[in-house]
Image (cartoon, rainbow, N blue to C red; front, side, top):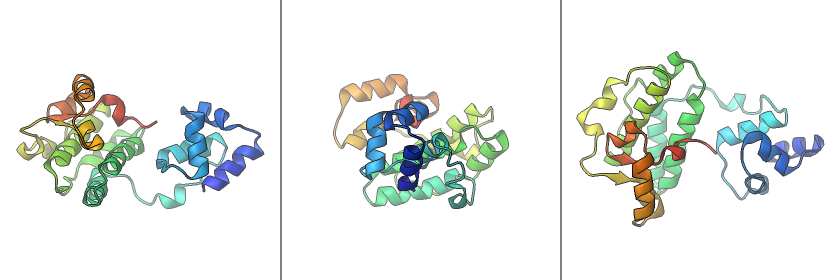
Amino acid sequence: MVERLRAARLELGLSQADIADRIGTTQSAIARLESGHSDPRLSTLERYARAVGVEHAFEAGRTTAPTLERTADEVRASLKAGEAGEALRHVIQFLDDIDGVDRAAVRQSVRVEPDGTGDERWDALLAGIAEYASRRAGLSTPGWASAPGRFLRKFWFVVEELMGRPMPGLAALSAGSASPELASRGVFLDRASLESV
């Protein structure tokens, strides 16, 4: 697929910088994507496809609507493999997938309580994501997301998990910029980390 996108870019006479401008990223990110030295999000590939007029490139692969239940399964698998960064990518992909869909679709995507991930911190994060997505769509928070087990007793700074060591400066930054839906659960992740690049 990446080769198909690259070929479409070249056929249109567009540079990597042109594509980067069109999809809101950097030329170096496009170079890494095209070289195969990155693991891009599906939403990034979709934006690239739209930028070069390859509109229906990914529709066959999308058979079902995104759900937080499925995202929890992906997070669980990533955590089992020791890939916390990949687990967070699944959460961000979920938010990308429901961005711009109608309220009914958002309600459907968060209504079922997902099984536990095996880590109470990630369970709290997913509850916060359910509330965050619901609030953005003008919906009430699903009842399961407010259950006592979805709140941490000890603060969790996600950046320290991802970096594998204490990061006091970044932890302080995330404490100041975390969404209230996550912070109320003791999960501190800066708001910008919830947005796709």
